[in-house]
Length: 379
Length: 217
Image 1: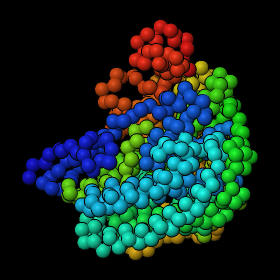
Image 2: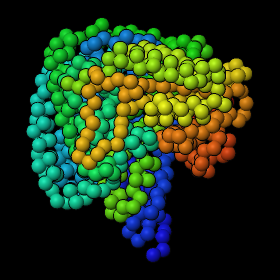
Image 3: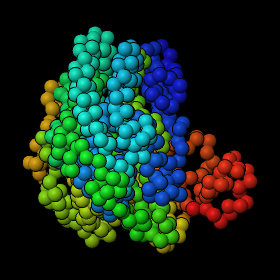
Image 4: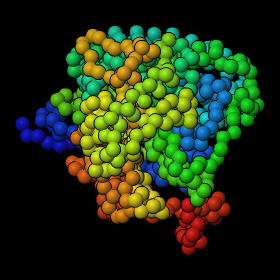
């Protein structure tokens, strides 16, 4: 049969954003692929050069609109490396709690978008219902529903409101029960298993070589996680285990393993949040004033010339990294260069190549199982 | 509880990596040092300053003998007002991750506090200063780490650093029909500065251009 190129995207349900996948097909079989990115490139790195260190945080929120808190935190750690800021321990706990709540919300968004890809529309409504609980919690902290601008260089913007901890505990415990319901619905669903099992194999070493990270690699059987390998925040004091799956084939993890690893990761996030609320210094039901030394330490605003800051952060889709260069006196409070490394920018071209050999109908399952986000990819 | 890499493990691994690089490449102009981050847990990492002519040899050795299996970022920076020998700089960030392929139905759960030798995760930072000029170029490491492929494409696209030997170089974030030689992160492209008054009086910016001559950041 004659081979031909077909174009999926930029408007296609599979893309989960704006990008184009060009697929060369032989009948129903994919024989070659090409990814085209850049549709929503906003030039964030260039904009950051004209902003103060503190003004950059809101732009980092907008890098990924489903995982704003983790991206802002990621930038904050790089800026703290550059400016040599100290952070109170209570602020580190609050950052951990907010980042893990964001991880729950982000994974729910992923599951909710992945379900309709596979043909399970119920999942969308269930996930949106539960994600709303966590967005409400984050709104209490940051004041906004999606773009919080919450962490600060040297601490956090404000303390947890009174009663926040009780609401977190109630909602997290409710969600742990609902996760069981999700698994009852999905793990025994024939459609779910047929569409996901044995599709989209990717093995650990090839993924690491291509720059893929986070849950996608843990699905292939290794519990490597930035949170223990390059520890930041207070993950070393909290009770948790990295989620890891046992892939069923020598070819590595399939779509089903990647679904399972994220379900397990949501359980671990619940566990971390509950444990952190028990261990937080200063108590979980106290509310310190804005700028109190328990939650904020004033940081220098100017970076010395030649200084650099780097952060390696376990974002919801993998390791996000920031590299910030200070510019000395002539640049004032602005950085000289901000470089952003998004885990999805290298993952999408890799995933496009793993589709070769599968059918066109498998493309949404494979792409969705890697959890693409185009906001952070294009920056 | 999984435990985390301890400061002792981290420091010993960083020192071992520095000693290994110095033992192999000492005296060739490659400078290696161990630094500590100033954020969070203040863990140590290895910083290498490498002249471009030694980069391919060092990169291959790092990948195959030092176990550096993860290329995380490639950053180009333009220093038009820098010294003659540092008009551009390419910074690479690498990670060493203890990740191997698994047999079916098995998984590796690292006992973190017992990790030793080459299994300890480590971070590497490689700086490559390039002289002033219009055509900065470094050798491509696309064939060594697949992960460097799209990072190099992006660095050429945005900063304009040429990667010698890179196959299939093309625009990734800028439009495909961007003019040749247009690389927006070079410093001659200025961002126009405007305060809020100007924004509200003239949201489209038609009147602004002459007024903000010299007011660029």
